[in-house]
Image (cartoon, rainbow, N blue to C red; front, side, top):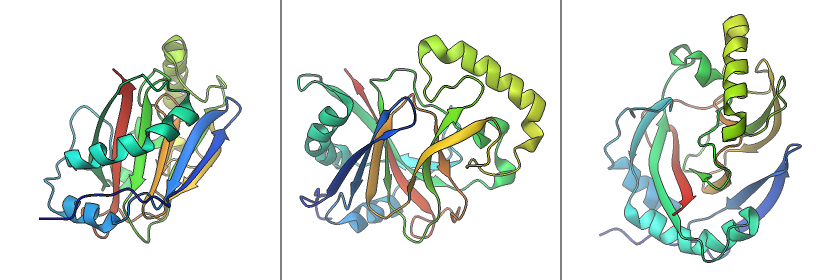
Length: 233
């Protein structure tokens, strides 16, 4: 039987604000005491292409023990960073993720920043479980609208504007999302580091940075992450 997952009591927690809108970005380094135990679990997990998402690779189920271990310990940091009240129950779900698609496999919407959900009280988390990888996660401002996040009220304006831009300049999207992506300005970024975890609002415009990443279907050599989402019940 594998050892139970444990949170590192000496994990380094930092909080900063992103962009003009000042969205919280929580960064926690060395979050698990034995992160390789989680990688070993991923090595035995049944990865497959996801359905109904734009994720450029493979997903697999996370063990229940992962979120059961993390959430109670991280909850105080969530409350401080995102103004979640202590009596608000949170629903969590997530998956292992391996980015495997090559640039030529990306569609236009996968070459620009995106948001996950429209509600600002929904949170997204990425836990980097890979070594020797380039890239990370970046946050963006859409130049035409000035939006750094997308709410229900902003959604129609944003989607219509971006689709029009893609129709006009989609052929200029010649690389992965990054500081040179047309019509977007990168406002901040977090570098990949093994056993680093980041949390941000799900409606913030963001994207994985794949430049320098090894996009392989191998949990020991590829860009392995644990991706999770939290919402009020």
